[in-house]
Length: 130
Image 1 (cartoon, rainbow, N blue to C red):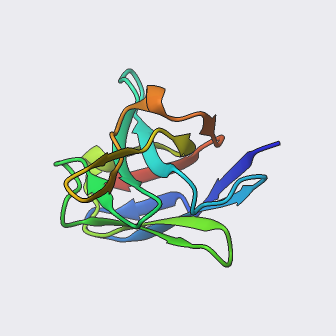
Image 2 (cartoon, helix red, strand yellow):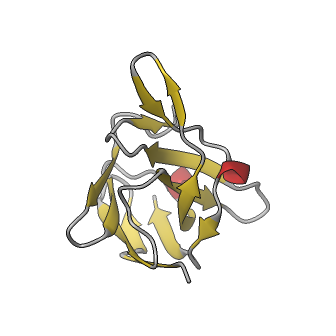
């Protein structure tokens, strides 16, 4: 049984940083796509970033240059480093796994589509105040 457990969320001021963690059990972080999604109150869930099995990563335009996704295969953990946080980053952040992986341009890539991912964590709240 696949289980994803997120942690690391919290409250920070604008410009601050947080690091989110997603520990996977029953699933290898090096297989298929894994990603981070977020959902703010009254809004749809949106893709933030995802990483393919070969390490190729993609980001939503709103977080490019500020967020970094990474994984530690030995710890079977996915990370999201978030810097220069803004109030509009406030949301519940979800770890996702079992994502559909595509091939093109000489490597693998993931799409930031929630429907592409099979497994989800319970989420961790991130609140950024101005």
